[in-house]
Image (cartoon, rainbow, N blue to C red; front, top):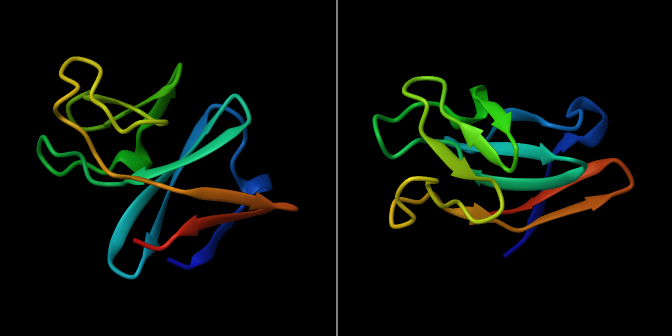
Length: 101
């Protein structure tokens, strides 16, 4: 699968999240203490926008109903069987590249 540039790392300070789109697919790009991760941007609970949430430790919190997902694995903190897809990420110079699903 090809990698595509989705953002500049200077736009994503440590411990923050941003929402980007690859086609119509929302993707949450998380910066957890300087490590960049990408996961599906749609919360499986009610479809909330994970990329508009907040980083808490290694998790992103959905802004709609406070469901937490580990940015590294996509697992829900309460029920690991509830998860979102994670995508491979590369950072080259300041470019954030995500493997296209």
